[in-house]
Length: 450
Ligand code: GLY
Ligand code: MN
Ligand code: MN
Image 1 (tube, protein in one colour):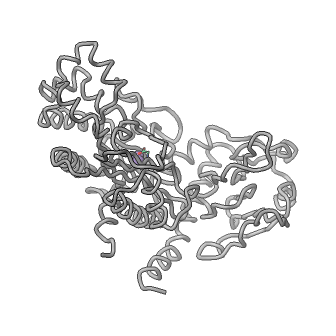
Image 2: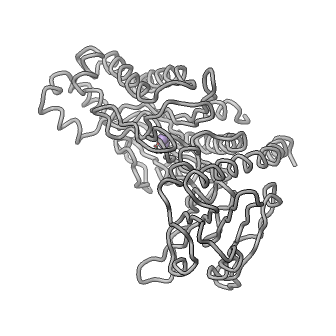
Image 3: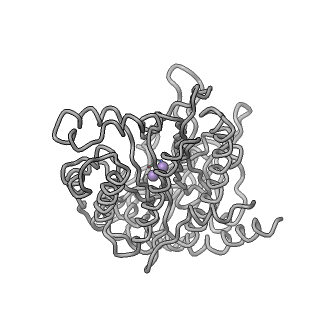
């Protein structure tokens, strides 16, 4: 085994036990606080296509994969009763049409009492007879009603578990670093394909090949947009042929490892030095936002600072005709930056719990005028967040702005020149520390083999 691979696998073996102990501890506390004696978590079911006998790709539920790094096991369960070893009830049907879930192997299996079952209904026999004090988390399924659980998806319990997920254990950070390493490999290959004249689809193939992933294994649909496509924030069409003239690439694509996602965006210019300079300017602005991140920072302030910096960038680039302050106050910056500056990242790309004031209840509202911000909490050591400033030339928003007081503050000639590039986004993943942050993405790019 190459040295780096063996070091990574040693780290997972070393850190999984403490991670599981932390999950057990917080689950024990959450169960006690919300009046339950045990927890049954479902991995999820396969969803069938209407009038067909095939299914959509399986996506495992996050509350299940926080326990076990198993991504290909529908209709399996984790059972946890405080004080006992957690039990994994793994569905392994005898089936010659589809391959059953693999028999688990690796660093985590000895921590679980593993019980294979051939049918979902048989899982009931692997659980205590009396489940009248237990909670269930997952989509309900027909036979569940007869299992005698106390509650399905109880809000108070789930809230406590979701709240706790924001702070990552060292094991989770190791998974996130590995996802970032793979993501950086994919982004490098994608950038090379772009320079070679590839279509959006071919750029995706280059990304997948470099990461060694199938599309359905990614944590979100990759956003791979040439030219104006970059102005569609979650652009989902992958054109099979390149346009006649290629100006730019915006690629927002991530990978997961052990169930933990990275979420990375880079923007590339083909030839245009002016647009390349603008990307560079955005990159510096993104780094300056990253430099302000540490435990204790209120994410709502980060959102507002990003708008102040965007106002300055737009003015410097001659895209707007007013001061940074005026661009913020009049809503001009929101025409160009209509999304949130970042979000929690982990088992889901947009992870849960971003608005929670406390495990007990209450939400922290978004600042007025920022309806798409997904995080309003104060950062704590161990949070992992994205930092993703951008500017976009979005027809819909520009047209709306042209008709009101914002219109006179925008340099329409300059907007006309830049629209063909779509937009710019620079997105890194940051692990918050007491005094700063670890930039998982930049570290991964810097460590790529030549
Ligand atoms: N990839 C989606 C996002 O950046 O939030
Ligand atoms: Mn993101
Ligand atoms: Mn992204």
